[in-house]
Image (cartoon, helix red, strand yellow):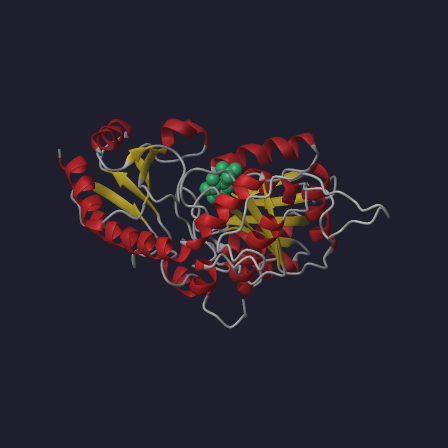
Length: 381
Ligand SMILES: *Cc1c(COP(=O)(O)O)cnc(C)c1O
């Protein structure tokens, strides 16, 4: 498909065209792991040797995501964590890394263990304060800076451009986990990020039926990208063919889903901000959010589908409200078509400082009025 189309149009066609042989409008699932050579031992088709890397469905999904991201190249991984792990494995032995504090708990837990085992110096810092990041980088000669914006679950916004400048001045690369934004809302490479990761398990697929991850590179000729791509090819944390096919199917409706989820999330955040049982709402789309101006600058078409709410009272009050919800499902994860609620303190405990009365809402594509009515009845009792 030509490159001048709007991304919504490209996505609806999954970046593909009908199969030239059959006219099929949807690609087939290609389960073959290996490809037969001819009598002269030549491979009949270039790029088809062994499916750890050689899978046309991966290539189609990767091209589509690279295009949304403004990246030179993208690689799919078996999960968001596999993608993040591939990035951290590119850090040289003995180096230092700066990781944003209070981000996706799974990342924090894994990175702490990984750094400890591999003698990497790990500095955790609140990167939503650019001065703090610069100070940290002056003290630690970091190789890599990892941020998440907006962060999960406290929805802090980090200024990507400021973080990229600070990282580059210190000789580090900037990696952004933009899962909570999606590449339709935020393209961190425009602001200088070197690599972007997503858990495609979330909004990219959007149907809560697949684990997948991606890493994209602004400069595909870098040595570090070679290491990350090699990690996929050699260490092999790959998606299966069926999963790649499901991801492509999910991506076809991404722009519609993101539009609805983001509009719903903003309406819900505004409703909750005026509710008398609510202490505080954390959502970058609210003018009162400390990162709102930066969010306006680096996000477009919405502020994401994650909204966290501090319920008046303590853990018991938050859990009771969650227990009364009838449309929101009490489940972890985010970015799916169905709205979910999670009490993060029940998962993270005291280790992270997550407020005991925080409920994280992942807003789906249901009608906003129904979601608001559900929250109202659950909070008002
Ligand atoms: C879920 C999530 C991940 C991990 O992704 P998996 O696909 O579950 O491995 C990483 N970062 C963020 C922000 C997430 O929400």
